[in-house]
Length: 381
Image (spheres, rainbow, N blue to C red):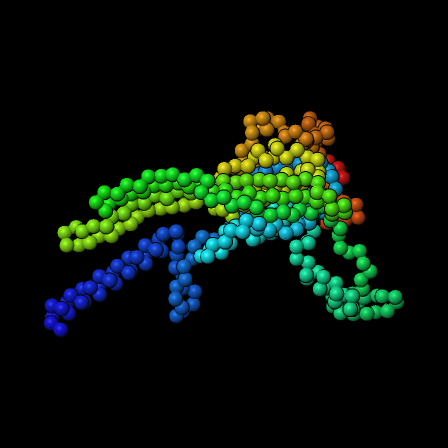
């Protein structure tokens, strides 16, 4: 190999190394990724954004409805969740099922966002509880302490039945529609192998849920909700010779509203409508608090703010709600005569013979502690 060929080879290797290094640095900058070497000798791993609360545009609506349930002073309903199946039949060879198979889990989370104002009965996966009951029935289950049974000290836990809480209602249903390309449009232009394109497209999904009386198996109410999703794509490309060099360049961008996030938001709204049906509350004022943006605060945080008389940050209320409370919802201290008395009155709800306080009551206790620093507080049980 001649000296000139060796120099050209060395130059090509250096150029390739510089290009690889620049692409690596560029890839680290894109998306906020950072590389980190955890232990000596290991290959660096890419670290992105931290874990966050999985919030949706329905957080303020859920908090508002939880406050309505809390103020209604009704006994918390026990609600179970059945299967929320994928009935669309849509499947992609590359990506698997098009819609989520975890609709029931999303519904559990939606009910859990109501701040303890409803009780959730586990009916979706009761295998662990059933297994422990079987161990207990065979006198194999213990807690490490001796138990008194019929005047004898035994190492196993006795079981007399009746420990499993009966449910009042359960919610079931499925994801029933995925409609592709409801509407699409755009423009694509190409001249001498230089082109540009722009297009938009819209699809939709729908869910159908129902709430059933557990004792009679009568369907109390049904709800059918639909959500549209819009995406876009823009790009430019060229494939041509410039002098003796051939250039093939493609640049562009495309994005779509998250499909599964929209399904989660639809399930959350359906949970509000169905629970409202069996509790007799009007859900419309709370549903109107939903936004077109993902809210930063969780429903539990917003609920705590609502019970302290503060408007949650980022949650806009309708113009009428900004001046008056939603129909059917009373002030936390309504009828307690606290105005002008110099004292703040707070109601604390609880269940008879139940030593546990619901999540909503915990927020009220926080409020009592804050109010006590300012002056006397009347606590009404």
